[in-house]
Length: 384
Image (cartoon, rainbow, N blue to C red):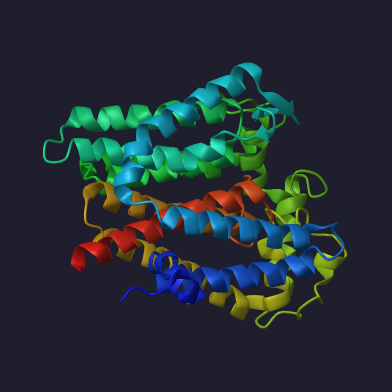
């Protein structure tokens, strides 16, 4: 007997939407979102409307996540090529018609001002996963060369803007897919050894390489300065080294248990620069200490492991590669942000997921979470 529409409960009407959500993943993200709101309330209490704007961005990201979770992986695969072409096309448009701010041309006015490089954080993993799915069972060395080219084009255009932080995130996402697709260790070890030797030489010859007037090829001046500041922040403690020094002071002043919520002097006396965005981890560390850091890192590790677990159980190669890449995107975000605030990595514009203020990055991460949930739901449908 049919049930009259008016008698169907709201819970029954919403049930198909909730089925697409992955419980463990949603729980971890909810914890991180709560931490983000708590820290933003403290660090941004006298910073205009940062807290309500942050809450609004979270709600928008949650809506995007819900919608993306309903898109089956097969549909995502069909969108891979057009989204990638659109993203690269917009990057070319930025290089020609883009808006320049503070010496960087990263934005495009299409009625509203957008930052097309954000699209590539999702478009590149989609495209590479699509490529390896098409070549499944017949992979050759040439296929990895094509994949490297598909990755290199957008990364090169983003570096040209210049936007080293976003380029690093896109590169990490693409390289993770190439690695998961089965690239030979013979191709991985040589560049890893070269990078290690370069780091050793850089540290050993820092006084010479970072001397006044010394110019490095390829890198922009500000990128060279960031690396030199990382090696020796005391070189310019009130200028370029100020961010790293104050970040480390904020982390150290928190001790084991922190100074307490809303009690951070480094934060509220505005010694920590960008305390609601890139350096919010220093504000969190000061108020919640080492114990809070351990709990926060545990939440991020749980998020990444859940993403990798979804990848392992995914029903197709496309889904496995895409889910694995998204998990590594979250790892890269968290590792780079915490590393640069702690003084072990150069300062780049990479936010801490769900904690830092920023609408575009928040929505991008929400869409990525929705993709993970869609892949997890597809596996459950296959099993049933």
